[in-house]
Image (cartoon, rainbow over the protein chains, first blue to last red):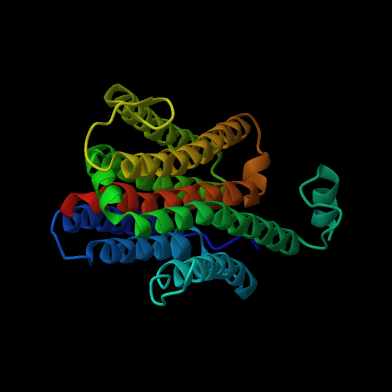
Length: 99
Length: 220
């Protein structure tokens, strides 16, 4: 009836991995990777978010409708970002008068 | 069914629900829909940040170089450990361990307060350095307008995050008091589970703020 009870071991392992990833992110940020720094840092953050969502927020053991709602928020954010960036990144492409 | 009738009378099972399972699923779904709206709230700010950083990459990198990574890193660790505390609190509620639940909730709130204290010290440093747009702005370095925009984004994003954490701390303390002085929360673990979802969400927001505000100026 209640949600799945996550073992203490799992909680601690997930937390340790999150701390290691955070430390890795700070360490990698010290090195200049010629424009790739932000992408790598965001990928690490995304991995941390997935770990928190799947294990600490129980998405792994949740019914499909809950996982769908969780995805809906992320997909909406992706639409917002894609729809905004396709404008501002392509503005200089065509010599439109009065731009 | 007799047990359910008693649960209904005590108020643990809402009148509109047939079973505990149905009630639990409805609560979880409602909480996740709320969190999806929160993604949209913070998402607007993240998008604004992305737009201005695309327009003014040099100014944002310069602004990020004025951040102290130590504060950001310490606070990241504090929040991750607070999430561990919260997940143990949820476990204690599910298993009906009332005293452990109270302890873990207090631990979670304490780490939340520690985060806000570190954030407060950091804000104080910005004020001392005159790096607060609109209030104290004495920045004399390159690209002043763009750096000001970066700091504006920084204060709005971390400010909104801190407000969320503050609300979380108050809620956790209320729950800790309820766990200490009554058995309601261990009879039914759903409220603590929902509180946990909120707390972990606030943690996830910070995990994305760290690289965008603190880390990206380090190497550029």
